[in-house]
Every structure is written in structure tokens, then in C-alpha cells.
Length: 279
Image 1 (cartoon, rainbow, N blue to C red):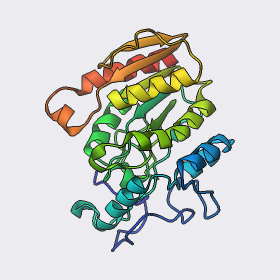
Image 2 (image 1 turned 180 degrees about the horizontal axis):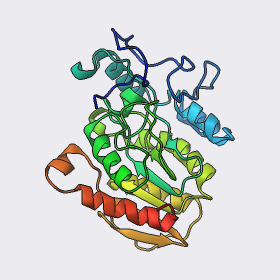
Image 3 (image 1 turned 60 degrees about the horizontal axis):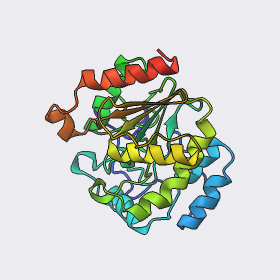
């Protein structure tokens, strides 16, 4: 299937307007409107995340954040210049909020959206080769309705799963700074707080996500193991019924070299689903 940011059934693309999608203009699953408050600083992120009150409002506020100038500049530059293969498509070009089940048994936590993946489609972990491998595995494990996810509005559904990122904007070279990570953390904390009563397993895609998960678990007051477990593929830690799992990220480098394979991903997701009582 050809990747496309268009919802199914829409007209074939002509030249797409450059730049990020304005909120409230009809992009599939966009929760924001022109009236959604915009965080322009780390302080504002803390205030707006803490006061959102609902998952819908939180994701709306996440999706219009402008707290980190370097990330704002990069994500919007990419949305204007675009990759040649997607030159006719409009890019989302905004922070990518969490998506999936509102009462998930499993959380899949990653680093950040890809510049030409989630930053293009508006949905985390979709629209690139890593997303192809990830969704093939989720589909095999009964956690996704279809084997591909190429665009917001393509009919894909996550079953008992929510996907979230520690940093909501695509960073240059896929490397956010510590200050950017910390500025974005209240969005992650607020999302965890709104869904935590149902979560039974957290799958961490990569070391960055592993570290972010442990920071959130410590913040929530859980008893932390000492020493903190090192990240590794298939690493399991049980905290009062919550299963934390390490998983290598299905990046092209990892999949091409065989560091992570489909069966390796399947084993992690099946373990998470089984513990959460999903499959």
C-alpha cells in the first residue's frame, strides 16, 4: 500500500499546501481547534497539561504546543521542504499526540515521531518503514485491526493499546536535547495520569523510552527497584502488577541488521497482551 496522508476515499492529491496543518481544519482525528490554548514555554506546558482535565483536551493541547523553538522550527521546515516521495502531500507538521485506546491495557512508549513518518501523518509510529514493521507485529498479535497504518483516518484501530512518545515533536537527527525532553515531560505525565488506572503493561521502544518510563513510574510514587534495571530487548520488570518490558526499536538499522526481527517483536507484544488480558 502506498503511504499517503489522505484519508481513504478522498480525491487524488494535487499540489499540497506547504507547512503545518492549521488546527480545526478537518485533518482526521485532529482534536484541536483555533481556540485550543497554545503552550509557548515550558512553564505553560506544565500549566496546560495539568489543567486539561480530559484525554481529548490533553491531546488537543499537545498537538499545538510551541514550547521548544528548535523543534518547532525543524518540524515546520520539514513540512515545507518535504521528502521527494511525499512532495504532493501535506505534512501534519505539528506535535504528534498520543493515540489509540482511551482505556488501554498496554502502552507502547517511544522516543519521538519521525520527521517523514508521524510528522507527516499526524499519528505516532506510522508512515515509515519502522511503522510498517511495528504494525505487522501488532496485527499478528491481535493488537491492531489491520497490518498497515499509513495515515490518520485510514481505519486503523489499536485494540487495548495506546501509543505515546516521550517527545512529541520530530527532533533533528532524532536527538532531542535534555531541555526539550524535560519541557515535554508534563504532556507525558498528564497522559499517564489519565490512563494509568487501566494500564497493565508498558512496552518501551528503545533506551530513551525505557528511561522516560522509569521517570514517570517514580513520579507516580511506585516503589522503584534498586538498582534500576538496565534496558534490553525482552527485559521484564514487575511492579505491583504492572509489567514493564524493554523492546528494541524496529528502526531500519535494527531490522536490516537482524538486531530485531518480527518474531522478537511478536514475543514482546504477546507477553504484554497476555499480561493485560487482551489476547
